[in-house]
Image 1 (cartoon, one colour):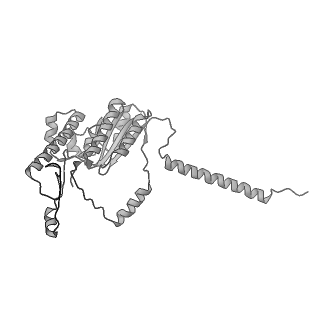
Image 2 (cartoon, one colour):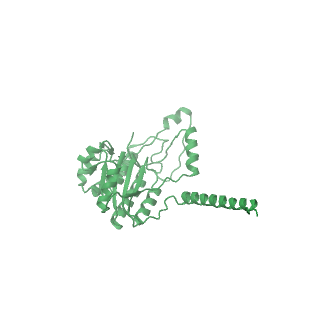
Length: 298
């Protein structure tokens, strides 16, 4: 009596079912990874790392991550890794204020770790944290405000173009690139600059527990190395990111090697398009109007 063998069509059907199941599982894992990149089922206490990198133009991503970490009871401390020359006044202030809220209202420890550069708006953010750790060669400081405007009046005259402005008040076209700035214009803008500069000085004085007069003496836009900043009491300790994480773990009372988490970079179609276009078309920025910046000029 011959041994019975599985029916070939039935065997192929079973193989197809296995392949479809494996494929579906892989697709599901891919979708979870794309849609929920930070999904974590671990119950282990951890240190979160938030990176503020490049020119600070918008605060929304940083604010969202700070809120998520602030609301997560498993996150015992946040290390803000700053590698930025600063940027816009408002986004720098928004991140600064969010760090303060997490410290004051949620009693969560926040440590600043400075990279290659953490100046102007980057330092403004660091001033809100519990402790600041910088590398000896970090460029920091640059406590000040800058406003840059172009004047194309001479060029327009050369090419025979005339600007026609109809305005409701004497200062409605303040900072216009189409006319020369007069003394009254400059006085108004300088007063605005001085007020925003004072806000920076007050934030540093409050965050670093320093006298306003002592901060004002350092707030002329100069930069410091990390070692110089430590001597000037603008920085607490010298060290790298790992030192900052260890400090955060120690201050938070975590024993052993701390679990470290940080948001994964979310890749979007926009990133791809901007990356490809950036290779072909140079990044030309023509800013119009009045823009205040906590930015290290370079």
